[in-house]
Image (tube, one colour):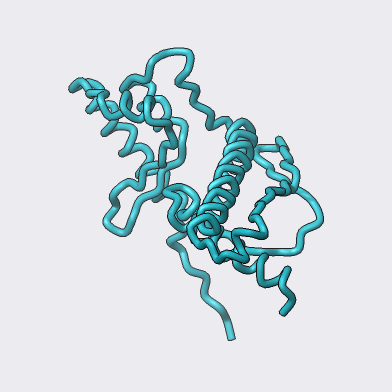
Length: 189
């Protein structure tokens, strides 16, 4: 194996490790594939495309660091490189999410007014919700920064909003079960 291949392999393994530590990226499966273009999304007759993104980062490790076997500096350089790689992956993911959510109409902007229980309930009404084997709702994940997260945690539902939430979940449960296929086709041999 050539030196360049060994170096690329080390960086690839370390990047995979850093991605596995990331609370968001580690939940997203990925595969390597030969790909010639971007991605196309369709929803209700509308279409959006996202380009195939390239990540180009530079890592510089001095000759002296390698010759003197300075593992602390070497490890720090690789760590900073992979942190940049993870940050770039986040930027690409959020750009794609923005494109797709704009297309599907699942955009909820909390910048114009402060988050509230009614805003959360409005969001639940618009999103599809699936149910697990115990018929419990599997609610969508909300990706939020620390400030918005704290505001969301502090939201309290009134009894009327609790009742509305129950009605929404029950409607979503009926919709979910109505879409399930119960009928089986029989085959004639």
